[in-house]
Length: 431
Ligand code: KE4
Image 1 (cartoon, rainbow, N blue to C red):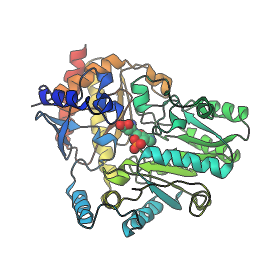
Image 2 (cartoon, rainbow, N blue to C red):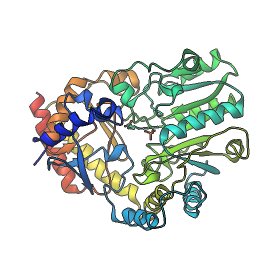
Image 3 (cartoon, helix red, strand yellow):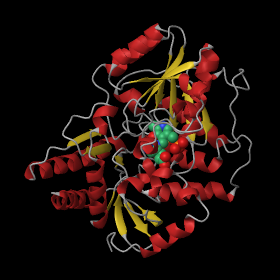
């Protein structure tokens, strides 16, 4: 079956709404912006997802990025069950957390020390608190359309679900918090300079996704990251790369390897947990040793460094290094991009595709998408129809124009070919 019958999903969704707000544990899963009830997943295997109605899909969400080897990778499942035999959590130190931390510091030269947490939100929140504590300055700069999780300081002109649902910011974020968050424009160094000039010696940190993934994929313009590095260094502002998506995704050493930039702090997540709950932040020793128990900035977590997540992450990151995964992903993603571009040529369409490695977006706009505003020119109603057509054709995309499609090593050439055909049929049906 390919995504047409969904009675059991519909029944589950009705039931879920009796016990869970909006029936979901994360807003984007409600499928609100694609005008349909969400599907419920029974299982995943390789590049495929199977919903509770028996429909099979080629999955391009990959749990929003973590599953770089696809679903239920035997090597990772084996590692998790091995560790689970010995217990699931101790709230105490374990050897596996050292092994993953060591591996991260070997792959990220900018990271001397790394602290594990349980989500990307926690990583970004903590990196901001550390920056404020270390510098004694209160303000931060973020970029419109970038998403760093649901921490209060970030829910101003954020991306991902905030953008998808058209929430301007979020009630509950106090004025005083919001006033310490300054908003710049991605790929506009001038917008950063203006904020710095207007807030001399008040800015603790600049945080950004070095490749945006939460307004759809938006790569940095040539030289943008370098200029940002230069200006933050000269102004004693901590530069934080939020690599929760791009870390281990666009290159083993993330965007900082791909673009050869050394941030002061890095946030990681997703891939380093192999699909289990995880986040991490790290950087130079002088910053990281300002964290308790060495320094005064407090941050803690019951399940931080959870042995199962560490084991899944360590196995994932170890395989990444050993198997030259990124070259293979680049080749497959390139095939997919070429196929979609050929389709648009044949259909005389000029929608935009942005891609960095195995993260890609098709924007329903004829404008080049270089920042938040140009992403907003996309026709979200058209995306909604496209999403539903692709689902009918057995292709599961992000239920939002403002998210990223991810490939995994489990995506076969046959999957790519099937996706290209489904894209052609879906685009044709929209015309
Ligand atoms: P979590 O707290 O959701 O683990 O991570 C927050 C986060 C931080 N930084 C970046 C760059 C991120 O992309 C995210 C979370 N990504 C979204 C998807 N774009 C999570 C999906 C969801 O909210 O359900």
